[in-house]
Length: 621
Image 1 (cartoon, rainbow, N blue to C red):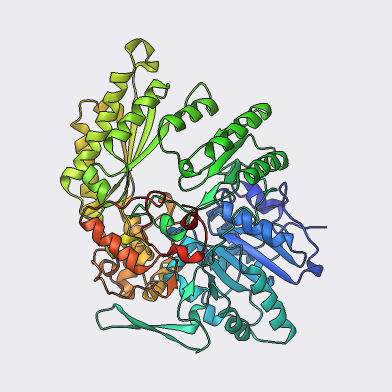
Image 2: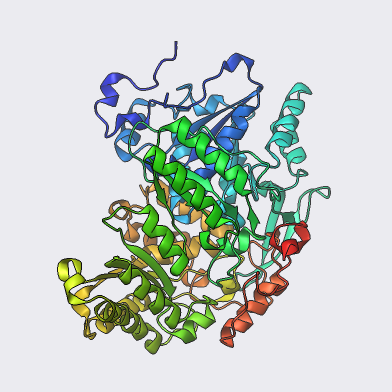
């Protein structure tokens, strides 16, 4: 009989005890005695966020299809349980077996965003696994990292045994087979890691050494073994239709962030926005077959009981068979009384027609992401969106009955001027004016429109054309937010516009982690030791503690943020190959400075290098 790791007394003391008991619908139970490999799959944040992540559901489903592998789920205990587990020395456990993670073979951690780095240390600490890879003995799990943040793994390299670079469907079987073989031969932990380092997509950080110049920049890298690769190429699934998909996803007991069936319709994006890391990392665009998607939708709705289905993609409008898929879903979902959610759509006549069919009479808000307030700056970032298109889309939306529009912008983009910032208020005002021009007085619900204008702060990310760009200081960011607010308050329709902005100090820290090297690890470790945890949650973020840690560790924040990089500077992530060439990214950086636009992949190939994978949009056009 399965015994819970936490007593009833403890469960009654914590918020949402259902986070910790497992046994949800479609969770997988196996006989541990029959398993060759036990794998704990961790999302280092609270259960509600981790359970909403499609990537973990895919890996969980795939690994549990194999008869000799049992994959369990692990999430960061919330602060209330964290305190109790430390006081009572309760080791972190897998939800399925309720047994300690430290007794399993692997601990896999997906790293989706930089502000979860201290949570990763929390997971290791509560699991009673030494934080630093070099201190782990033969009886400890192999700690493996995956996800988008592994495209610059160096700030966290000290804490991981290995990183899996790229899409998870391709190499886990080979990695496990080597683990089993090495164990049967009586091989050591080091023997396993040496063999793993030769598997495509696997990076073992302890086998490489960073060499620095006197100015703190990277001089080069040294391999400790000759037979491991100089460069690690990302793993990629070229046939996304004929691969693993979780048709029986785990259904949580409590409401989570994305409480619906998620249908991934394609990977990658044709658009080429120069600030967007995902748009580069997931090239080339690969579409799932529409027949498979229809099949998945029916199966997943049947297997979960969900009442909503969402299409997942970086740009859903660009999916070739979208109209056919939506016609099917609208017909099928209307029979089941199921809602359809359509994020990442461009606002045009087709999209609005579709949304009018699938949304309730009470229409929810529409989202536009102009990203910049002026056409000049939209050209710099290669957004491919004109003011005319935005206003036309808004007019169509208002004619269709929508009265609430969300607008997303970025502050601190390269070459930004005060005029660009003021343009945010101007554009917000023009959209509000479009409502009053388009909708007659007698047809205005509640009499007015609501424009919610939000700004985040630009953070240069690895493997984007802006990886060379300087980032603003906290003070500069706040000044830009003040100018934006001022610009909105000067508008004729200011009462119809609400303004929100992101926290500047969090953005600065994220900028350090995004482009950091191994020297940043000691700051992360020190911050964790001083109590930093759940840094992506504003109520638990302590900027003063972080600043003290940078000072005490002798690490200069500005070196990683405000400094512009030379064209030939070696970056901490240059030993990785995401498929897009450095030459292409540099060419796009130069075009950005010249305010030149690059057409999207469907219009004209830009020679990014992703055609080496031999498929996807590179060969379909």
